[in-house]
Length: 185
Image (cartoon, rainbow, N blue to C red; front, side, top):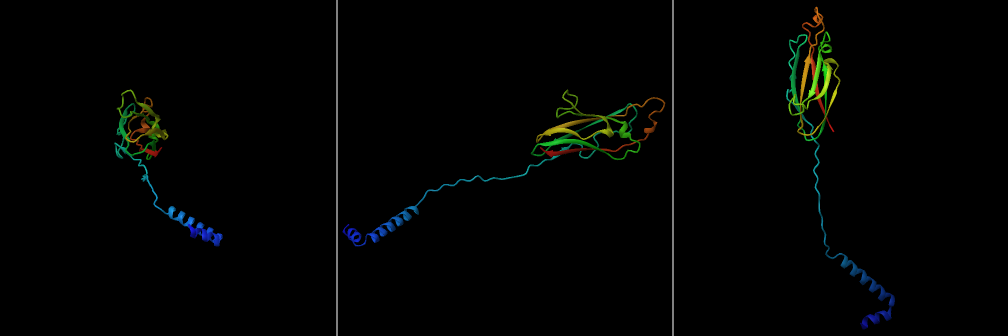
């Protein structure tokens, strides 16, 4: 203690600077001491959804409409399923190919959505009713992953009258392709 007093008496400024240096050194030593730390992480994986569909006819005709005659009808069904892992908004459209005498403009078409419980069970929902060649793109709604809808197509060759009124259509043919499109919701 005598030494500190002697240093203070000899040069108070020098003693004060020494004490300040000692205080700073102590603070540095204390600040650089052991610290507790803790870290957590939330790793993320990002993947894009996959929108896929299956068609039970797999690029085959929905109905066989060969040999139609006035007053006759043909029908067939197809099941469309969302086999992806995201919702999809589905649309049915058609494209007419070969049709030299506008046979597609003569034929009537009814399309119903039978859902997945089968056609004729009381839950059928009309999708389109009109001429084959006039069918616009029809929205079918949103299908969740795994949703399946069975569609029934009925084509009718309406009678045009008596005395050969339908003779213009003898041997006629029309090629129509039905397209099922889905886009993410």
